[in-house]
Length: 97
Image (cartoon, rainbow, N blue to C red; front, side, top):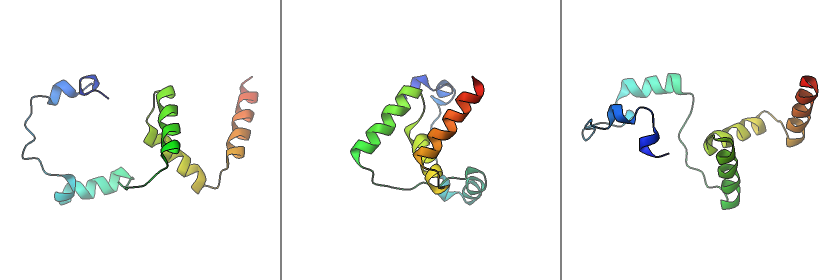
């Protein structure tokens, strides 16, 4: 994303964040983020081909590849297979037709 395409870029463009602290260094913000964030920052190694697939799909849908990867991991954790997802999609499409 280009900084200029961010809708709130202009609002903060002139502000000086030189003395800003990371969230992890402000206990109240760390607690708030843990309470409301529901996500953890991790480092993971992924095959280049796998990453390319997620990035391509995200670009096609206008989404974010990290969100798509998170959704795929959620489905795996829930025990859903690709076949389950396909069946559910077909049922939904038949129901709407």
